[in-house]
Image 1 (cartoon, rainbow, N blue to C red):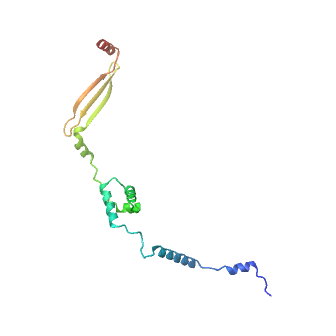
Image 2 (cartoon, one colour):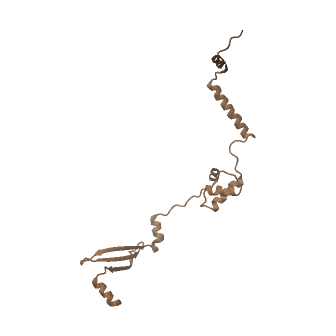
Image 3 (tube, one colour):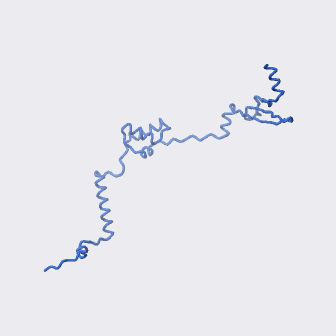
Length: 168
């Protein structure tokens, strides 16, 4: 007659002890199987961007220098060309920016148009204010020539009475 097997003994017989190396080997084999299925025809890596698409990206960059990769990517999608934005930026033509001009070059180029304007306030001996507006042009290698100097006197009672007499 068979004796009943205790539940703990039944559980121990169902468990199998596996080494960690075996689990890692199974995992790697699964990945190999997946990628061999994914690639199928032996092609590896990203799909190749055709020469026509690369030339189109370069042409769009040259004709529209203010467009960046997102804009060109959007235009290509509108044309039905499925390509990633990172691929567009990879094939974009990098335009070299011209060097910026120096301060000296700027002054030489714009010397004829430069004008400085001063506005000063001066207190007089009789406690009034005189307002001066002065503007002058600048010439490189020459002294500045004044265009005009205007003096505005603070209105007082005497000035007001003179204006009333003149303008009635």
